[in-house]
Length: 281
Image 1 (tube, rainbow, N blue to C red):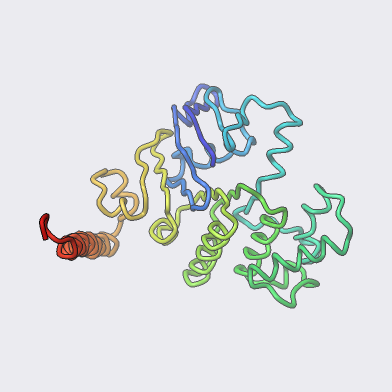
Image 2: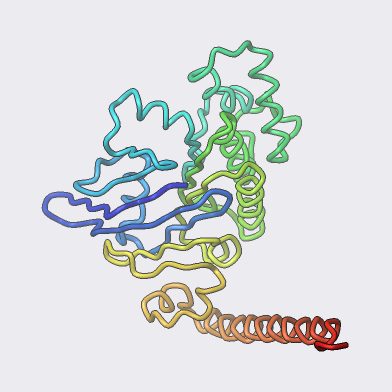
């Protein structure tokens, strides 16, 4: 779990993050969304330590990352995986070498042990027979999957994804979303995703933090976002007429599910009551 408590960050007397707090739990995809300039990228950089907040705290599993010394922060960073927006693969290294890089940097494992781990995570992200290929030989979706393999090769507790669907076609983007979600649940990772992609929001948003002009404007789940009355959030998420119509249809669908669930609960209660004889019988 990652806790953000009252984070504030300014640049040249301009406040970019203002008193933002959030709790991001393990085993779920935690999304930070907002327009360009809303402060979401700065917030993520404060969380991983690339920026030092002016005030407030970032806690990893209850440990205050903000007040740690360099050695202590290094230990936390060993538990963090990062999927960069442009994948950030080393062009001069093969797929195998790219994924092995964190193992060579942070462990003293033998080459065989490192190679076994590389092959394990490559298989997990559905990359086969590509160990000796270079990034220039890969499609955009394959690059993202290799970058994801590298991000999880150290078996991190925390995974940060910066615009993981940037530059991908819709179908490939959905596959990457599903893969991130599966890995998050499978390894019980606290995953934080910075995204503009509304498919990601609606499909994987177990927790959503909506930023507006440096402030936390709204927070909730992808199910709750359908029923939100926050006008700024609705204007951002459901900007087009098509998406507004989709929202209306999803509201009807979700309302039906809730009604069905209530009806089923009532029916079960009624059935249970018939199984219990009245007093005296």
